[in-house]
Image 1: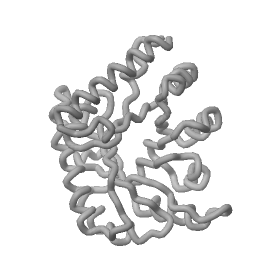
Image 2: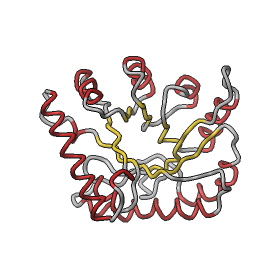
Image 3: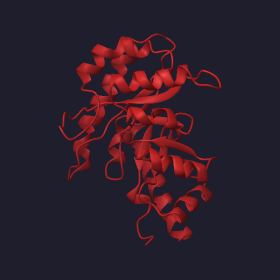
Amino acid sequence: MLARLQDNLNQVRDRMTAACHRAERPVDSVQLVAVTKAAPLDAIAGLIELGQTELAENRPQQLSARQKMWPGAHWHLIGHLQRNKAKSIVGLTHLIHSVDSWRLAECLANVGATASSEPRRVPILLEVNISGEASKDGYIPSELWTAWDQLVALPGLEIRGLMTMAPILDDPQGAREVFAGLRELRDALQDRSPENVQLRELSMGMSGDFEAAILEGATLVRVGSRLFEGLS
């Protein structure tokens, strides 16, 4: 299994490298986040053994369980987070990608500011529904623009950037418009942000469209199924 996992990982990394070259970007400007939600435990252990330690889960409960098994990995939460689970997940996550409302942002900020050990700034990305699909979570761009000054003023948050999901299309290049829209929104928000807010991260692109995302400026790509093909 480890050999197949290594081959899959190499293929994804090679495609990321080629996309970076096409975009005339440094290869190390994009980080692979392996989505392990459907992966067997031995495959997760194999990824870590192969040096892939940026891992992501959709569900807070599963992230918590797996973080306890592999505390040395960096765990990213990419799925919906309910406010009543915010306190339990802060401290386990390297980065929360899916902050999709003012109420959740405020809740996480309060958790960070009132942490019992010491106050902390919770690292997050704000999820944006660039495509406007009713089935997707996230801020509508105009709503995020309106709420921005309040969001960056929350003392318990470290807003590192934005996240989006593109529609599933037959031609992944069709997703580039969505990815470009997120980059342009990030750039506009950076221009109106205080100096202590640095929006370095763009989390966009999955197994079917990560190359298109890299061409439009992604710094984090979330890949799952491509890494685990042929393991069963």
